[in-house]
Image (cartoon, rainbow, N blue to C red; front, side, top):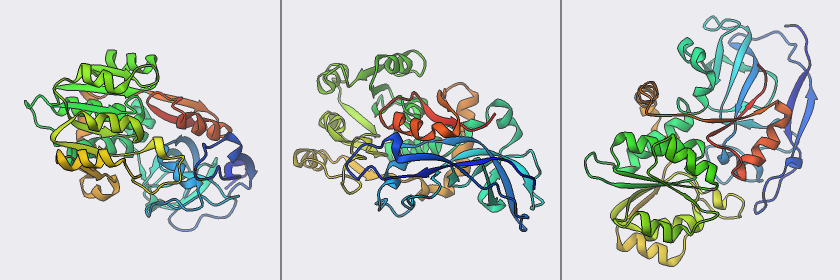
Length: 353
């Protein structure tokens, strides 16, 4: 299979369950190139792109706290929830060298590696010509999470003039969820994010009616001003005090899409994290639904959902922005930046051209 330099990202240390991740938790190291003969059904992959996702933070702990993904092992290669690679050599008749593939689930932060062909899928040529990284955002797990979260838990009704609020609205999932909510019929769309640049992007390009900068504005007061009619749907990516402010403004029989709790990812808490007594009372008194959403529970809907996402994207109703960090050696740096809100849209690492 030839020979070449190979590198991978290793978990050097754990930040601790209640600390922010650091670049020093990761190391970039040389490793052996896969020189063994491929077994039947194997593919040799050259990595092109990595998907970075906030949910990976739990894998830095000794116990991930969730059943569907394992904690990373110290001294071992880090793997993420998505990526794009090129087939270099194939021992499976369904794949040829040059094919562009993406994983069904996990993807190593490594330059060259061998995988079983049944763990990846070939990207359609039409997608690779537009942008292969679409499978990491709107046409991947991120898009599916946004679309199915809104569809299954949002209860949006056309012509009902519902108000939808999205937290972490300038992130990869939040930005899509808001646009999907608008496309599906919500009447007013409010995004909460952490910079004026992000706010401007939401309102000028993505169709949000209002954007709130939680770092410079009082979220509770601003919601009172812009949502006098209350809030009907809340796509919750952050938890914490921001979510408490939104919940206090929610209407009777409204709905929370509990997608992520990034405000509490660096705290030693169960998932979903506990909420204050007054918020619990509000949920009960107003009959507000707040059920954890896990996209993997809806795999039977992935195909039609991806079809709808492609339709919305082609129609120009879903716009995608990427923050790209160059080089596998900078994956740890990009992850730390993302966890501090340094990205707009989808955070991606471009491993090779």
